[in-house]
Amino acid sequence: MTTTSQGPVLLVGLGSQGRAYLTAARRLGLDVLVVDRAAALASPKTRRILDDAVTVIPVKDVALPTDWYLAARGACEARPPIGVVAFSEDHVVPAALVATERGLPGPGLHAALVSRDKSLQRSLFQVAGICQPRWVHTSEMEEALAWLADHDRAVAKPVDRGGSSGVRLVTSAAELVAWHEAEQPGTFLLEEFVEGPEFSVELLVREGTVLFANVTAKATTRPPVFVETGHTAPADISVDLWSTLVSAGTDVVVALGMATGIAHVELRAADQGPAVMEVAVRTPGDHIMETVGAAWGTDMFENVVRLACGLPIWTSTRPRRVAEVRFPDAAQIQAGRLAELEVGDRAGILMSSVTSASAGSTWHDSSSRGGAFIVHDDDHPRLEARMAALLRGEFSTVGPGGGVA
Image 1 (cartoon, rainbow, N blue to C red):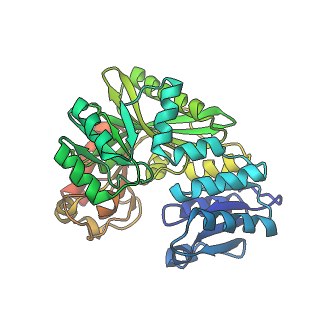
Image 2: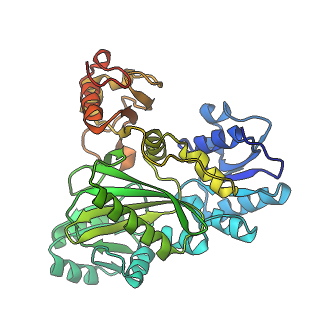
Image 3: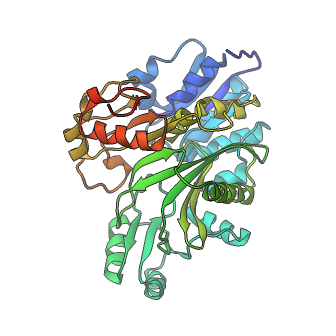
């Protein structure tokens, strides 16, 4: 355990997937300040990991950016932190403000602000010459319809949402109008639909230098919606494609002017080269942190805390195994009896939050899904066989590290 008496680390936002930041910080011997919604702080799972070295600062359950910022800033007045970590979308800019004010490591305000607005990302990537879909940002339906007429089909996106919320492929004027009436976005993007497999690149960055990079393969539902059904790390791709994707992700980090932290860059491997879809300078969702960590034999949450506090990170020079997070639909949950799984390395399962509460086989965004589980094995073929067996409910035929019997 690393110990320090210099001060606490400030965690802006925690939720459920961010609890690992608190666990990592305590493992490092750090005191912790946690700013989060009152309801999240009251969760039994969160309360179990709180101790006397953790100070909680609640914000109201419907919190605005000003609420997050003022609460985080107020926490610093009483106990100046040595590092600041943002968890999710709502927390990125308030945390960057506090880190900048206090001269602490962080992605920087420029990177944080661009990360929060998909239209700013498109503008910045255009200026930087980064390959991306053709696009238009507008609030006017007449302009949007004219753009769509020139491109046959487009991906419609609200500029300020996450979790695939409101993202839809439209192929006609009628579909675009119906989408706009249903989503009621203030402004929105129309983007060229790019063919090609989807990936993400996770990068750990210190003072603009990339210290670690991973490529994750992404699986999604078929259009017209694009909801993630699974992520596999590391991606089973050629060395050349891996290098090209990491290079594209690094170009995004440079364009952002990002200083320190984690970047999650989403791309499609198109015929003309990787096309950047979007970027976030915060914790990637969908349990990608746990999946990448399992593959590389490291703790990604601890590494982000270390970066925020100016401590050395610990990573492997190459992946140690293969891991996948899968989001089963209602039919898969039933067929595989997945709601019966328990947390633990049973049959190669590192984590299971699967419930029987899936909204069904048709999803509209990430909130439709009924849980997740993370599976690992020695290589991609064994992982694929293990996953198939689990989805059939064949737990007894699978053993950790040994594939399907």
